[in-house]
Structures are given as structure tokens and as C-alpha cells.
Image 1 (cartoon, rainbow, N blue to C red):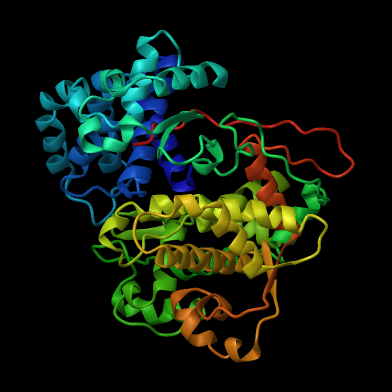
Image 2 (image 1 turned 180 degrees about the horizontal axis):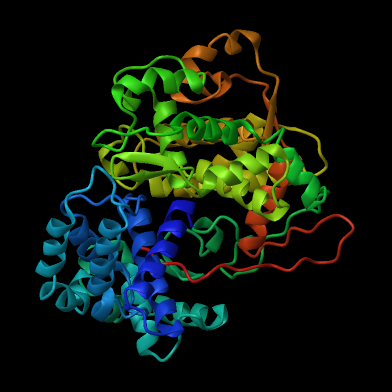
Length: 511
């Protein structure tokens, strides 16, 4: 969970308790779970990651566009969802946490009130439900809990796949008319998520969830070679040197804020302050505001998201993340906290940005791109397990071969090129973060540094060249291994017994 979201949720729960809205520890847990589900869904499915920024229509979209079609009501969202958001908006107002680009809270509360009669009815209207909600509702109706063993959920999916079209319609209803492929597609379930593969695709879960290793459709864990890693304390020290690129930029933003800085009504640096901020970040001068320099826009967004900066209406102050970065760069931070923060920032760098322009059939292009880079990191982790670098183009070709069936309808060369560009750009970010080392860069490409810096990528990513090699650093190997373990993969350390494999909470349902 992004640090800003976690901080704001903590503050909200404390405020609600002090206001007498939470009467017991159990109730407090329910409030936390409910607001977490709502804010995470808002960020993931509506692309509104800032929990303090609410515009006209946001409340309606949260409930009618996200909750109604996607969420099984395991958290009493039908009865308590509106009250939870009503209290959250009042908290933002009372705590001076409202983003300057937000509309007035009384206006937002009127949106909540207007949903009072419509929303509970819509929650039970099956014609509005998307695939995952229909499937999980049917599973619950058959007496199977959503946290049942994977084998039980797989067995239910196999029974569903054996149904004829009319049998499937009993579960999928109107979706069968909207998406005829659902009549013959292969349903798969994994870790609180649902996927429907096309009739011609193999029933392989790794096509939908890249960190699974078996092609047969089961949930056999992916197998990765053993690697050697330094101790956590040594890795944390590396963050202060090798992994300081993005952290140093965020620290520079926090230092620039200082005392008494304010932002404009969009929550961005004022036009008169932008040149000084660009100079502090060693970025070339851009156009008007942050929008003229994409690199500055991204750094500012990350500073807000990781609570390095906090917006208090039009005031901007340093947040808790600024102190954590300072201790990490000074080498005095607690190793676990330092590595967690560094990895969280790396995870955010892995998330592909929304493309500026996409073809008409690319409406969900960002979601389509999301699994590519995690799978590439798995390939890179395997190819460089001995510490030797691997040829970048060879690994990208392997990725494209594995994911050939994931290319959307249309020009395959266009989408393959887009996926390769996303891999290179993300590798550029990870190299700057100290997770990846790229070698073999032509000097002429490096001469394009100024143009590349304005958009926040390395020249070799903007102008790809043959012969580049890539390798994971010790920090990068630690990052990828933690991600693999969280997905249930077998990623041992050399000379150690099998490792514990942590698992995450049940994810919100997918469309």
C-alpha cells in the first residue's frame, strides 16, 4: 500500500475513534478494512491514487463504477460503504488534509446523500456485475468460501468450464451477450482474482499471472535458481550509495519545501517556484508548471505518494517519508525499514504509466502492460543468477515469445514494440534506483542525455541499441526475490534450506 494511503488511513481511524465513531477494537478493524478496500479500489481501478483529492463525480464513480460492478460484499460495503466515505470526507476537512484541487466537502457530501437510495439497490443488481463478482458470488452461493484452498476453487472452475453456454449463462448472465467468448473461454481462479482465457489458449495460469510456473493450469510454484545475497544490514548500507538515485531526488524536493512553501490550486508548485525546484533537482528548464517537464511531474507525484511531502490545502510540508529517506541516506536507518521503503519505491517504478496516446482497442492498455515487467524481472533473475550479465535483447525476445498470446487484437508489431519500450524504460528507472546495471552503452547515445533527462529516462532506453547487457545488483536481486516469494515462488538462497513463503491478503476482485 502506498505510504500516503497508509498514513491517511491511520490518521482517519484515529480521528474516527476520537470522534466516537469507533466504539471497539473490532469496530476499528472493520473501519480500517472498509476504507482500505475503498481507497485501494479507487486507486487501482479508477486511477485516482491520492486519497486526499476528490473532484466532482468521484464519489459516484467510486461506488457505481468500482464497488457495484466489482466488489463482493464481504466487508459490508452495501450497508456501511456510504457512511464510511462520508466520515472519511469529514475527516479530510477537519484535519486540513483536503487536496487543494478538491471540491468543497459539503458538495461531496451531497453526492454521498444522492447515492443513498440508488447504491444499495445497485449492489444487488446482477446486470451491473462484472466477471469476477459474478463468479465469486456463484462460488459463495455453492457454499465455498473465497479463502478456500486453491484446489477447491480450481475444482469449481473446472465444473464451470464443463458447462454448455446456457449453463454458463446462469452465472454470467448478460455478460454472455457482451462478450461471446465467455461462452467457450477457459475460466481460471487464482489468489482472489479471475481470468477468462480465449478458447484457443492453453489453460495455463501463468498466461494471466506471470509468476506462476506451471503450464498445466495448476498453482505449482515457479522454480528459480538459488542466489547469493548479502545480509540485510549490508544491503541497507548499499541503499545509501548504490540505491540513492530516486531517494536523493525525493530528499531534494523535501529540502526545497523548507518553511512556508505553498502550492497552486492543482496541488503543484507555483509557476514562480518551478525554476528553483528544477535547479534543485538538476533538471533542464521545461514549459509552464510541472507539466512542461515530465520528470518533475513524476518526482512530485512520488513525493506526495510516499508521504515525503504532505499537502495541507494550499500549504505543503515535509511528511514522515522525508525523515525515513534522510536516515536511509545517512546509513542510520533500521535495515528492515530502509529496505522496505526502497522496495516500495521500486514497486511503484515498476507500474507502467498510462500511455499518452493509445489505439482505440487499447482502452485497458495499462492493465495489459502491467504483468510484462514482473515477468521480465523473473527472466532476468534466472539469467543472471550466477552474477553474470545477460544480453538485453535476448531476454526481451524471450518475453515476447512467452507472451505472444497476450498481444491484443491489432498490429502485433505495434504492441510488441510497446511492451519492449516499457521494459527498457522501466529498466532505466530501476538502474537509476540501484537495482539494475546496464552495460555496453554507446558514447553517442550518452550524448543525448539532456533530451532524455527532460522526460526522465536514460538515453539508451530512449534510443535502443544492440549489444546491451543487463544484470541485477545485490539490491535488485533482493527486490526480485522478495517479489517472487510474495507470489509463492520457490526462490532459495544458495546454501540455505527452503525459505518461508509469505502470502498477501485477498486482492480486490478483477473485472
